[in-house]
Length: 337
Ligand code: NAD
View 1: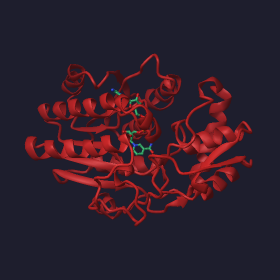
View 2: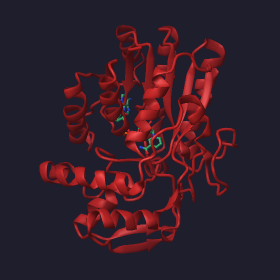
View 3: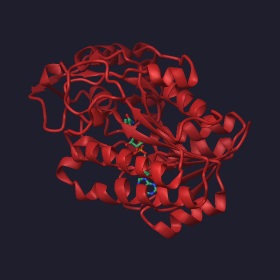
C-alpha cells in the first residue's frame, strides 16, 4: 500500500536517504528540515537535497519544528499517514559543552511533533532514539528491556526523555509510536562530525587523528542502506503495537582500532595516530540485540563494514573533488553516536 509519509530532518544524513528510498517504493513523501543560514553544514544539507530529494520528486518544507504553529501546520497540511521524525541536534560531544542548545531541537520540537501527530490523528509515529540511552555498560548485546536510566551525556538524556514523552502520548492520547534506537549509522552523505568521516578527511589530508581509549571502544557500526531498509519496512507495516522500542543495529560490534584499519585499507593510506584517554560522555561499547526488529519486519540486510566503508570512501572522493569548501577542517573527530 502506498501512502503519504512525512520525514523530518529530511536534509540530514539518514533523512535524505530515507526520503529517496520511500519515494522509490512509490510513497508520497513530504520532507521537512530547518535550513538555518548560520548552520556550518548548510551547504552539505543543500547538496543532499539536490542529490537525493530533488531527483526523487520529494518536496522539502523549510520549517522549524521548535515553532508549535509551524509544526501543526506542517502535519495538518500534509495529512501524512505515517511520520518519521529524525530532526534533532545529534552528537554526544557538543551536548556536554552546550546542553541548552539541545533543549529546543530535541525536546521542544519533539513535544510539538507529538502534539501535532496526536491532534492530526497520524496513524503511526516512528522516531529516532539512540543507542546512547543504554549508557556505559559492557554486557552485550543490548536488549530493549535493559535498564536505560543512566545517560552518560545530555544528548543521551534528551533521547531517553523523548522515549518517556512518546510513551506518555501513546498511553494517554492513543498515538501509536515506534522508538528506534539507531546504532552508529555510517555511509555516503554522512555527518562530518562523526568519527568515520573526520578520520577519513584527516587521513586524506595527512593530518593526525586522535584515538581515544587506545581505540579499544567497541561500536556496532550500521550501514545507512540497512537502516533505511528497516525504517521503510516499519513505515509500511500495517498495524503494529501502540508502543514499541526497537534496536536498529547489526549486533556485530568492532573495536574502533579495527574499524580504523578497515578505513585505512579503503583509503589506501595509513593514519598518524595520537592517543588520548576516554572522554566524558563516551561509552565503552555499543551492541544491538536486533531480535525484536527482526520479529517485526523479518531478516534485514547486513552490509559488511569493508563494503560500507568502500562505498563511503568512493562517495567521499567525488565529494571532496566537487565541494572541498563544504568540508569543515576542524570538526570534532570522535562523536560516535
Ligand atoms: P543529521 O544532523 O544529519 O540530521 C538531523 C536533521 O534535523 C538536520 O538536517 C537538521 O537541520 C534537522 N533539524 C534539527 N533541528 C530542527 C528543527 N528544529 N526543525 C526542523 N529540522 C531540524 O543527523 P542524522 O545522523 O541524520 O540523525 C538523524 C536522527 O537519528 C537524529 O535524531 C539523531 O539523533 C538520530 N541518531 C543518529 C545516529 C547516527 O549514527 N547517525 C545514531 C543514533 C541516533
